[in-house]
Length: 168
Image 1 (cartoon, rainbow, N blue to C red):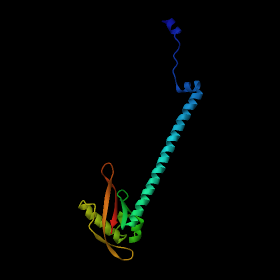
Image 2: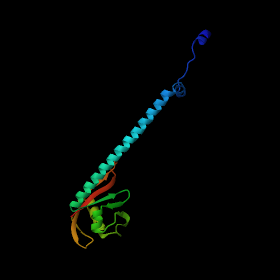
Image 3: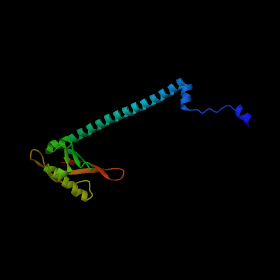
Image 4: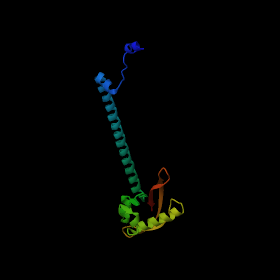
């Protein structure tokens, strides 16, 4: 037994430190390759994000052009912020602000008050279209409109946004 202990060669454990000390060139190449892979992945993600943003900008512009051709006015309501965002055409036509906060809507424009009341009535009836209602533009001219919208829900079916339009 004693003889066997002296005859066996001691076991050497392999560690990262020993590997790097024994193979510095190979370790440098491995670290460089990993670094290049990470940098390449980051660049690819950034390029894809830029492509997606450019496509989104084109889609938004196309929709704005389409909305300007027809007599439609676009809005979006954010449930979390309790703010209604209005497109430029809607703001100019009815003299409204870009953002209208829910808490102060009654103090703002009478047209927004009418829109919001129509939305609440239709929501109670579980419809996504209002009955026709009148609004007054900045020139004092009254016209009939109806509102169509779609509610966007999150994964737990909680409403997040209302996206819609007013149609003359």
